[in-house]
Length: 70
Image 1 (cartoon, one colour):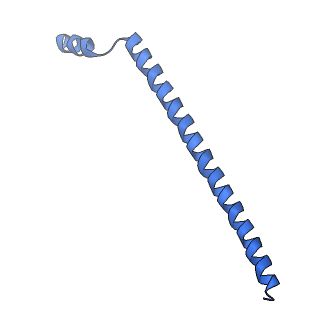
Image 2 (spheres, one colour):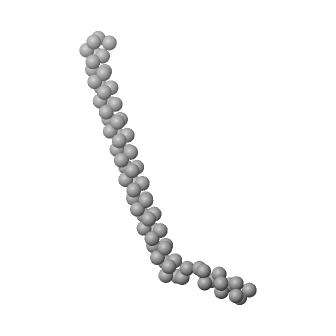
Image 3 (cartoon, helix red, strand yellow):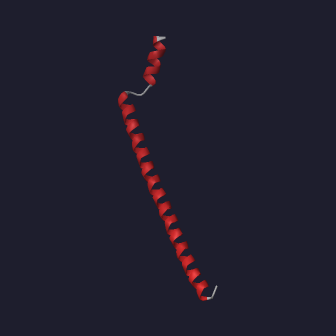
């Protein structure tokens, strides 16, 4: 049993390797979160712009309709 424990223990990464891997993973997650935030902000801005464009078109169409006596 002791031999098997030592064998498994020898395969496991050391504390420094675990720390480095954890730090790398945290950095990747942080970058992904930042990218996702940027993409979300772009999408929100695009939706807002599209809404504004549609509102402007509606105003123009309403003005044209009012001139035509509708």
